Image (tube, rainbow, N blue to C red; front, side):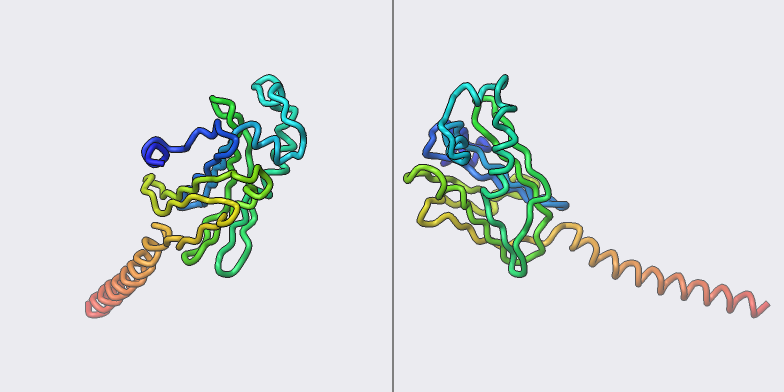
Length: 192
């Protein structure tokens, strides 16, 4: 597990292990699910054929995996179920399958991520979920299993939210100064 924190995404060669890396950006949230080829084929409920998961033949199963990718995770906020904005499926350099699922940035407050795909894989399958911010600071870390495939966290405010609050106050203050300045110049002009 220390390797995962230091080195980034785990390589999921083991069909009983996968990883979910969640990164918060100012404009959105990216969830990257990495799993072994044999695990990905279980999502399709088709027999695993190693030849389907080579760079030459991957396009044959890629569209099927994309359809399955929308059901990998349930992401909810305090008020709503989040719908993915986009999804991409690729082979990693070691021929792992990587699902990149993009969401809008959740509003500040509670967020629940449930790895529903774990129940579709082998009985002893486990996953590691790591939540990081834009600077790769680890915000949350959890090992997931069939018995506990849910992570709850607090979505932080965006840096833009904090800046925009300051900006609104600044704009009001600058507007007040400008009005005062204009009033002063108008008064000076009338005195002449």
